Length: 84
Image 1: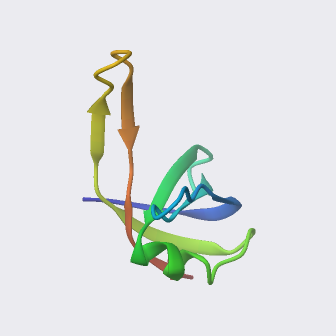
Image 2 (image 1 turned 90 degrees about the vertical axis):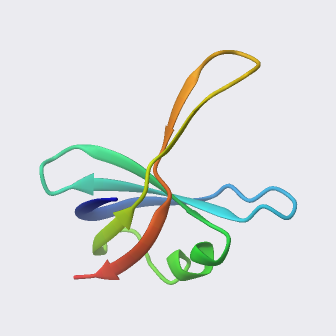
């Protein structure tokens, strides 16, 4: 599990069919950018937040390699989000 702190820059709804997902773009306190996915029930939790809010996010790691293309993806699913 990882923890990241920063300011929300963008919230994108990437839901498709029955798969509900938000992607939050976060500007970290160190100045970097990170993209955290909130899936399923966690999407509803992330819906309560707005751009420019300062947050702490806990996430897991869900990296995969596409069987079709061989491209590696480093997904970071959020498991909690707290306003600070």
